[in-house]
Image (tube, one colour):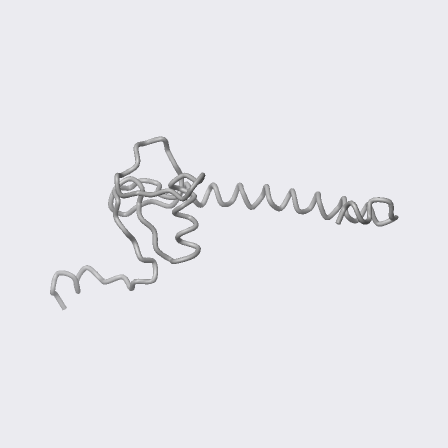
Length: 107
């Protein structure tokens, strides 16, 4: 698009669009990093959406050039399921949560 209109008078509007896009991308990246850092696995209390440098579980997997954290984010976005890379537990985010009383047979 830039190469088609670089000589026109609307180059200033393209520059504004590029700057606004870059700033909004940086803000979104900062928010996503803070949210990914605060997500914890209930079983091992690890951060499955952000690599911490610890060894991954043997059942964890990564897609191509991505690491396990980005793969978990993509799995959550596409299938609503993910596997913790530290303990190997699979989680289904669409599965209803059972209460503690119902699990132990108390009513």
